[in-house]
Amino acid sequence: MFITDIKRVIDQVSREKGIDAEVLITTLKEAIISAARKKIGPRADIEVHYNEKSGDVEVFHFKEVVEEVEYPDSELTLDDGYEYDPDCEIGDSLGIRIDTEEFGRIAAQSAKQVIIQKMREAERNAVYENFITKKGKILNGIVQRFDRGSVIVNLGQAEAVLRPRDQMPRENYKRGDRIRAYVLDVLEESKGAQIILSRTHPEFLVELFKTEVPEVAEGIVSLRGAARVPGLRAKVAVSSIDSDVDPVGACVGMKGNRVQSIVQELRGEKIDIVQWSPDIARFVCNALSPAEIARVIIDEDNNSMEVIVNDEYLSIAIGKGGQNVSLACEITGWHLEVTSEEEYSREVKAGYDSLMKLSDVRLSLAETLFKSGYASLLDILEASPEDLASVMDIAPEAAQAVIEESKQILDQEQLEQERLTLEHKEQERKELERQKQEKPEHDQEQEQAEAQINGQEEARAEDPVDLEEAGTGDDGQEEEKPEE
Image 1: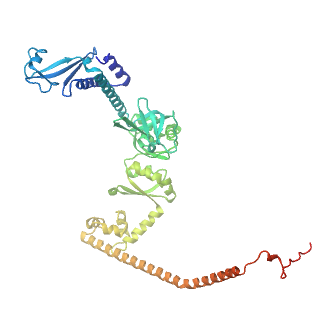
Image 2 (image 1 turned 60 degrees about the vertical axis):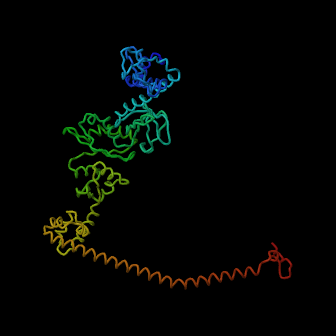
Image 3 (image 1 turned 30 degrees about the horizontal axis):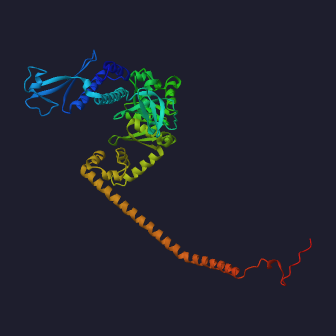
């Protein structure tokens, strides 16, 4: 056999590389078939038998018995067939055992290359199958090197990449640093499995809580959602299936030791742990903590809420750079608009004033319309007669009349606005004309002043001063210097 002690090789590679022995045996058979066809011909029907106990390999070349041979690598005559099977007949397929040494040195080298290639493919597949099960988990590794901003991390059996966008802000790495990261994805590529890590993904925070909080790992406390501004702030919504277990307290830990270990891992990222609630209004109020909420107005059709807070809590509710409200939107899944009570009062007054322009709308009805989502005449105009009739408790025909009246009022307001715009433009035009009329007088005075200055400069140019004569009298003699 051109590969000596093949059983030992297969057992060793399977043990050291973690590759299934069956995969290696299949690879061996394919390599031998490839080598045999290079020697015999591409149409040759080759079959390989491998004895797993002894490691012996038998190779058979199958040929069809025919009256006249057209393809020598797959056919033989009846007379030739008698040499292998005296009872053969036309149409039979005979398996002729062949010596692998006949493949020759070139065929053996080709088989070796195929085996090496297949082993590498099998090894890559083994790495992929191993790490695909770790997707969504946290792994420990060592910083190996750097590549165009990415950090290459050694995970032992394979290397992984931590891309720039998956790195924490202001976090610097050095070769040899130990690192924990979340397995974001495992991609199967021609060069092998590509393992993508992340330290910025919200699920990294979730997995850290599973590691640090036993109640989370045991399923008593559930993490209902997580949102992050990596390195700055995060929010986690939690609930408990056990009424005796406070989910927020369990995650914070005694003297904050549990959450602080996570904060340290995230390089000081501030973490808000909020109580989840099936009541979406209560959940939103919890999510916007530490701000105190005065009221919420829910718009289920648009999955949005208007959140009204006391004036002194407006900046707290919004947060630095909008972080607090943005994270609250993310973990609740609702669009939140935060407004101060003062601003909301102005909006309500403006809405009431707009609605009360309608002839049959008084304050009480304006309040009803406003609370039903009709905050202006434009909302009335866009409403359907049936919906508006239901809110106003009138007939659809009467509601249609209200809609038409809204259109008339809005049209009048638009005409008035256009009139004011034209008046403003006319005033600007007159002001420009006035400035143009005053400008010639100003320009004439300026030209006279410039002419006077130019005349003085020309006079000086025509009467130059001789520096040598500057120190003599009229007679050309030097003036006497006064005695000291």
